[in-house]
Image 1 (cartoon, rainbow, N blue to C red):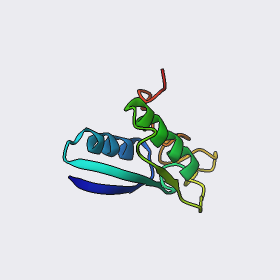
Image 2: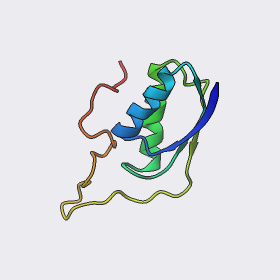
Image 3: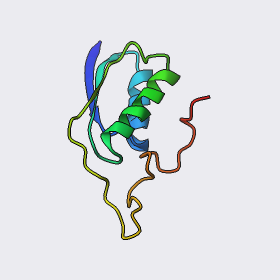
Length: 97
C-alpha cells in the first residue's frame, strides 16, 4: 500500500484528485495539507472536510492548514478570476445533504 500525504488547494480540480485517491485500493492517504490556491486555505480545508465526510473518512484522515493565507487573484469588480469564492467553480454536487 502506497502511503500519500496530499498537499493541495482543494478547489474543484483537487477535490476530484482526492476522490480519485480515496477510491484507490492501493493508496492510503495519511493526511491532507491545505494551502492557498484556488481559494483561501481556510475555505479549501472546509471543502476537503466535506469530501472526507461524504466518504465517512472525517475521523480517519487528518487535515493540516497552512499558516499563510493570501487572497485569490481578483478583477476590478473584486470577484475571483479563477474560481468562485468556495474554489469549487460551479460544481455544486459537494453540498452536504
